[in-house]
Length: 175
Ligand code: AR6
Image 1 (cartoon, rainbow, N blue to C red):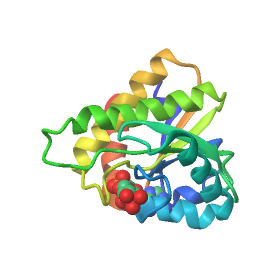
Image 2: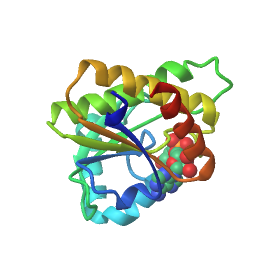
Image 3: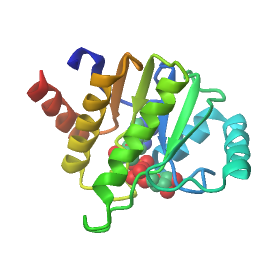
Image 4: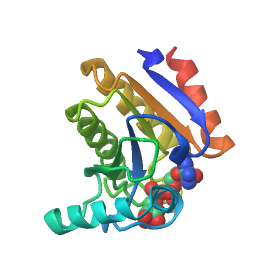
């Protein structure tokens, strides 16, 4: 199972996979952090696609996910999911973070995509403690892969040394 999960350090906008996941906000219309980087790299086609989804479905609630084209990115699609804002741990944050990963993976499976790259959802502006978030991300993805043949490959794209160390430790423990 672990060979289907890989840890990469770098910028998710440069990764050549079928789908990359965006840590979006409910508006789906862009923001800072990885969301801003993805929209900058993808260009106006991504924003137009997000506006269309927004018109059709309204806002995207925390834990939910939607899929769009990827504009100028090397990926074929972008899955936009909204992670929870960390409010101290008593506001369903863990369940919502699990839902964000699971619902993103379900869209990847449903669209027949073989590879997906995740950023560390909620661990930047939304303030989720990093070690706890990494454990949830890793366990949720591992569990999903035991019951689904797609995606074949999942990349955790870590932007900084701390997240890279956390994810590498989890991968080593599960090997
Ligand atoms: N590639 C990979 N990871 C990145 C990149 C990148 N280019 N840039 C940042 N990260 P954040 P959140 C990491 O704040 O906490 C936005 O304004 C970053 O180091 O992007 O879910 C949205 O619109 C961190 O570990 O997302 C929402 O309003 C991780 O990505 C809000 O931020 C997530 O940090 C979402 O907050």
